[in-house]
Every structure is written in C-alpha cells, then in structure tokens.
Length: 119
Image 1 (cartoon, one colour):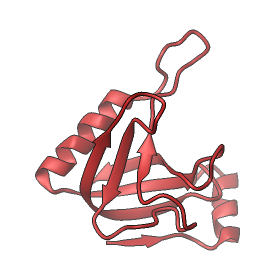
Image 2 (image 1 turned 90 degrees about the vertical axis):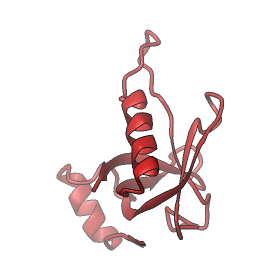
Image 3 (image 1 turned 120 degrees about the vertical axis):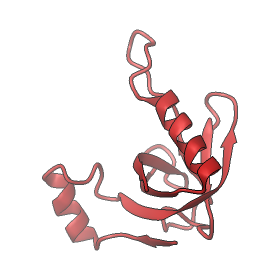
Image 4 (image 1 turned 45 degrees about the horizontal axis):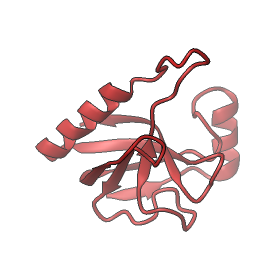
C-alpha cells in the first residue's frame, strides 16, 4: 500500500485538460480495512485503507468519505448505491482498490472520494 501524487504543477496541468478531477487529487491503492456507514450528512460512508492514516496527505482525517449528491429537485445524481455495493464487495473479497481522492472543498481536513477502481 502506498499513497502517491504528482507534483502540484503536473497535477494542475492534468486537471486543466480533464485528466484529473481536481488539481489536489491524488491516488491511493490498498485493501479496505473498514467501511463505516453512518446517518446521512455525517460522512455517510467512510473508507479506511490498511496502513493509510492520512489519505489526502494534509494531516487531516484518517478516512476517505463519499456521500450522495442531489440535484435541485432532490434526485440523486451520483451512483451512490453502486459505489457502496462495489466497496462492500471489495472489502468482503479482500480486493485491492485504487482510490482517487481530494480534500473536501468546504473542509479540507476531510478527504473525499473522487473515483475508484478495483483489481
């Protein structure tokens, strides 16, 4: 398991051409140590990777979170249920996951999931 990220200039260039979601995005790989599900609005799904204590590399939270996103009519706009199911399967099977993460824009000490894949 390791965390890695491109230097800020490279990340900024990649973000400007759409290859990264955010200039501050970085990638992690590893296996899921714990999935934590809480009530909506309080980082509803938290992902803890084995051996990763600072996923965004900024001295913040020890977990990566994701939450559903809604449009102006209250309809869910992201694949929240698909993400949760895929992560639960990866945890159950001990699969390696690759997470792209970025500091939360409202509270940078928390690390949000941008996208992920499984091996």
